[in-house]
Image (cartoon, rainbow, N blue to C red; front, top):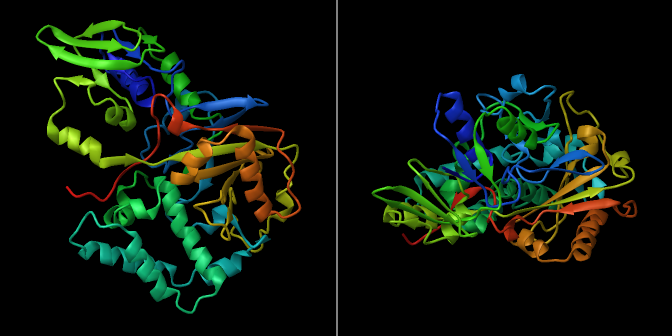
Length: 405
């Protein structure tokens, strides 16, 4: 039995069969679809939009990259040469301040000293004896030191790059330990360009299913109880169905493990239960906006950009990122489609998930008006993700928070 029909569960089946496992395999999935957080929507004129997982974070030794040889016409699109969220990759973005684009050369000038600031931050983290200390007090103290005589725009620009690190985690620096904040090597990315999949991540999921023989998937089968006895492993679902097996692989998200305290019998050992409870999942929301034309494209200021610049992101450094959506992915630059995808995290993501459709769209359009005053148009279609309210409790990045234990 495999519990969970997301990418982890389906790849488990794929590799079991690939390595010669002949046992019958049944996958139990709580949703009415497979894929989990890997979900490509095609409702906007057939354009594939990844509402969950979107990037291959570094193509060196990435397990999904070899599928390009197996899936006909699968195409990768380079989004940035390095990790956009953790590096100063200004080639991948067009930034705005008070409704005006910031020229590339001025960004470079305002970023002078930022590398030294990060080095200083990492040094302080390396000598900190309390691994649970929050990052915010240390960061704010260093900002005061490095930005004492800075212009308001430079201050906002530095905070924008700190905000990008928060987006990577799906959480504000208040909730992230200093050790976690500065451990770039542990943040789940590999070397090499960061890639989008032109056909969407679901193309990988569909390939795994199509190329794996002799297994079954049971949808709408939310697992409530997993018990082990002398005669094997027994699984009960919310539909009162019962299944038995000799072997079991559980691939459910952290949110399920935290919510379903009585999922396992006998209970998990305390060391595992404590580890599960000490982690948090970052919260993300995407608002996908399709327009009749890319009104924002005339505003792009390429200037003397390097030839490898992609400018796939639009950012507003003037906005309070905890109250407004200030980061957008530009699908016109990626696929020549007039679509913008806005990102909200943490409390803002949860707040917007609880809004009705009209209020959420009104809010994000107000945020776009702050970037392109007098130029925005109403979207013709939209999609709002609501992962926090998903019954299967899918979120995104797991991180360690400060704790008393």
